[in-house]
Amino acid sequence: MAKNEGQGSGRVALNERILTSMSRRSMAAHPWHDLEIGPGAPAVFNCVVEISKGSKVKYELDKSSGLIKVDRVLYSSVVYPHNYGFIPRTLCEDSDPMDVLVLMQEPVLPGCFLRARAIGLMPMIDQGEKDDKIIAVCADDPEFRHYRELKEIPPHRLAEIRRFFEDYKKNENKEVAVNDFLPAEDAIKAIGHSMDLYASYIVESLRQ
Image (cartoon, rainbow, N blue to C red):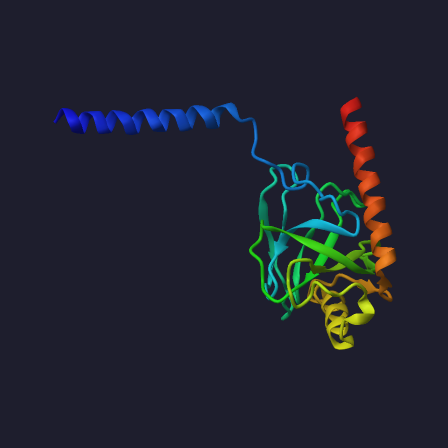
């Protein structure tokens, strides 16, 4: 009996230690702010996946908590053609981190991060506002990691990407325009600019 009591006491003490440790933390790690962009940025960078390849569910970052939330189910009969997410420690004019579509063989679970390489930029206007997307490949996928430029990607794959973003909001009566894709050089410049905007945002936040 005494042995059982000792085991029970040990379990209670362990739980207390865990709870005490949790109570000392003010918040969990935030994928936008706490995850580093990576030493190879802006050409090679970390990407947090929000939406898996083949998904019809529009997940997105909840900027206040850092969790991945369900925003909506797509209204159209389309699915995301590749893994989609954002680049940590970047900021765009819409006050969101930089969006990135990552070409690779397999779907990735929302909330995971991977290394990606920029190969192009897809200029996009979403309901009258600039909403450019980085086109990238997974830097650790043996089938895709050798790509350096959009022109190396089969034209049909690029046509699929364009058509998805042109159509995925049509049944919501929202207009999206996709302009001509731009090369890796433009994508790298756009990421660098978003890194600078994020740095300025952090400096201004610290002053307040």
